[in-house]
Amino acid sequence: MATKLSLNLQIWRQAGPDKPGKMVDYKLNDVSPDMSFLEMLDVLNDDLLQKGEEPVEFDNDCREGICGMCSLVINGVAHGPQKGTATCQLHMRKFKDGETVTIEPFRAKAFPVVKDLVVDRGAFDRIIAAGGYISINAGGAPDANAIPIPKEYADEAMDAAACIGCGACVAACPNASASLFVSAKISQLALLPQGQPERYRRATSMVAQMDAEGFGDCSNHAECEAVCPKEISIAHIARMKRDYLRSVFK
Image (cartoon, rainbow, N blue to C red):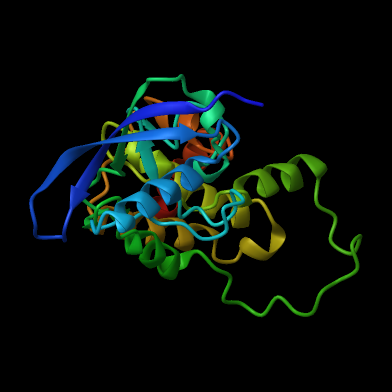
């Protein structure tokens, strides 16, 4: 049987958007190393409810690394210490018995705290609404070989489309830039024939909305790529900037 862990948790508690917040200490014993990080928080909340205390609010949904809602900064790292892993896929075996674990929300002007560890990432939705789609009539689904697409482009488009919109890139960037997210959503369409008619207009609109939301600019720290749970490359940011410049000069 795996040895149970005892953890010292330091968790950001904030009653609401306009309320002051602070780090609060909790002691949690008998943590199974086979638990996921979110299951550990479930156990903590069960204990708090039994004591008549307010549970810790945190975002979660699929718990399969797909939805991108599990947005936590763990020990100063977005999604925690395991590379290429969302918070919900992080297991407690990555931590040591007696370790102090800090848990905070994603920090960015464009991601205001709603309560505790929950932030409002509606800014991402508005960026997608600004141009992250194809509005032209692309016709019905063609045969697989009807539109020749080089495998290199298809693979790169699929890599970009793997972005789950979690916002870890913003949380990790010292400028709170959303460039990795926006560039991935631009690339996944820019690399395919269906995305070509609106390619440059899309880049202009989405970058403009990103700026309007209050995100910072990219300065090539590459922290976004380091914490991305889908390990999306910053090469997409270069494509976004090229498309934006072409759009401006056209």
